[in-house]
Amino acid sequence: MTKTSPTRPWAAAARRAAPLGCAVVLLGVLGGAPLARAEADGPDFFRVTGVAASDVLNLRAAPDASAAKLGEIPPGADGLSNLGCEGGLSFAEWQAATEAERAAGVQARWCRVAFGGVEGWVAARFLTEGSAPAPAAAAAGDLVLWRLVAVNGAPVEGTPEIDFAPDGAISGGTGCNRFQARGRMEGGSLVIEGPVATTRMACPPTLDAQESRILSVMQGPIAVAFDPLTGQLGLSNAGVTLALAPGGAPQAEAPAHRFSPAPGEAAEYWSVFGVEGHLNLRAEASTGAKVLAQILPGTVLRTSGCRAGDGQNWCEVEMLDGTQTRGWAAAEYLEPAGSALRAGQDIFDAIGHVPCAQAVGQPMGRCEFGVARDGGGSATVVVIRPDTRKRALFFQSGAFVSADTSQADGYPETTATREGDLTQVRVGAERYEIPDAVLFGG
Image 1 (cartoon, rainbow, N blue to C red):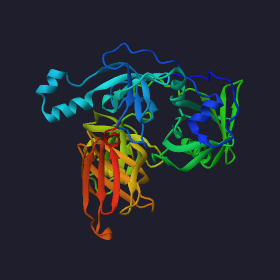
Image 2: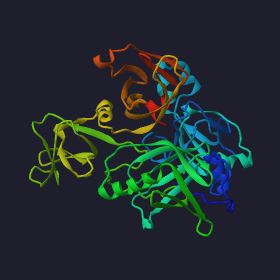
Image 3: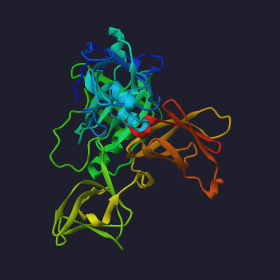
Image 4: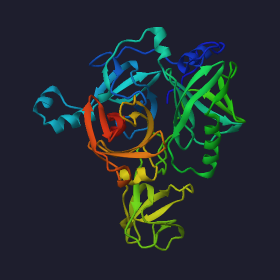
């Protein structure tokens, strides 16, 4: 990730309540290089479209939804420099294509853009023609990226970071899980509004302890301190102090063989089936190797690849039960873990908020959600309702299929309609608006 650095001197925090982005500019922590004019076909600048207010557009290292994520662009952001696009269909190909081929062509098109001093790839279906940013406004619209360097003075593990957007959106990673929140500056403090949403991947003990300390800070009013000599930002709350340096988390060179994908990368999940009792997880791809753990049927595992060995096929897998035990399992007892199974075990590809309402005539509010994706718009979306109960919504190829209704709630009627890039789902009196970006990623 391209680093940014402070370009303005320290200034006092605003005394009145203000959106987080405005306060960040006043604090002098917003940096970024000017955007250059595009040398590419199409508009010189793009604007983000079709991304829900509770979601973001991912900026990736390559034109692929599984590529490493370099940053997050807020919905409606304007002034993204067009550095060129690829994929999709030409006009002649479009005229001759079927509707299915046209839809596939839209999904295949990616554009390279520059935003906030960072260059990367975004899905073209979420872009429309934009306008050139004014020099002063361009900085105010950028993401503010900080990498966490110490917790209570001790160096961190992994690459935790916290990203601030001008509209008050906060996102980041603890070194294990991702989190999202909203905040505002008030009286020199950063005030977190509402609960912090997180993914729920099991973490090794050291990362789990680090995550607990980081998340303990991200609630209520947080004391903010800036050191103009070192350029570091300090966030303190609940007896924990986080030290952050400007710029996103550095991207380490990827090893040839890796178990845990970096945040934003696709992970391949498998589940145990066809065994009575348990499946042995072994230290090597051999039936004679040491047994590291015994895994029950239905358990979801993450795999980093399979190969032949000892007369059969084996897959190298990682357990997600908090132990992060890694080893080899016989491939014949593994099958792909569908989105419904993963969602049932709180293993999500993304989290966030979607518009929702729970009663007839009730204004739309915001509900937390988690999504497990199968690819191509097939996904399971689990919405956490205001009463903490969950509603699962199932999609196939981008189209709503069903919800997890039951006798307990009277098997309410379910319907769905399309409006632009949204699927509006009704489950009895409940209403949910699911953007395409939730289903397809991007």
